[in-house]
Length: 277
Image 1: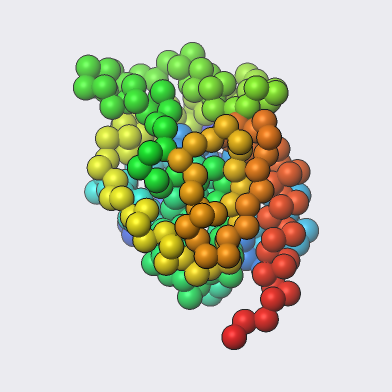
Image 2: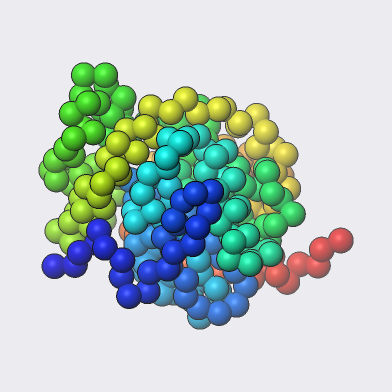
């Protein structure tokens, strides 16, 4: 059985904002940063990376509070703080310009990077991204906000609860939630500090920046599952393109890696072909 709570042969680390950020990097070409969602890790994009690495320099960090990066000492899990850390992370790698794609929380962070550092981005891909106040909160996050349950979850997160959350997050036809996937998520959630970081994240009062979304001028692709609510990026971002998957769930990059990778590659290729003024 894989030991997901320890570095893998292709693991790398870099110091940013007092954090030892774990990341993986593969491929050649224009830089593409992939950001996973909450309670996830770099492995969320494993299969999509395999498909994209022939055309892109694919960079995947474990976001603070998750995976092998672990918790922030300052416990600041506001999305703008995440965006600042991601921008600092890419700068620490010496990458001047890059596209960024994010799923769920990762998409929220990605569009915040687009607001705060537009000069660095060549493209933006939002996959079932969050950030609008009416977006439905998953059951696991609602449970983590319960003041009676919260102290217990800091000490233990049952494997069964992790499995239920994963099964609720995928579409009706998905068959990706198996023992290996549950083991990975459970082991990473059980790393020292990660459970408490998840509880802290779920209970962080996030600033509502959705009114600023129409200011995003970076070329944008929205990838969305038809069942996902609270999605107005195509309406609000000037010139944004959208593709809708008819039966995908919340974890599209794992459920439909070929669909996601093909869409990203085609879109970023069209951005590169478009002259800039």
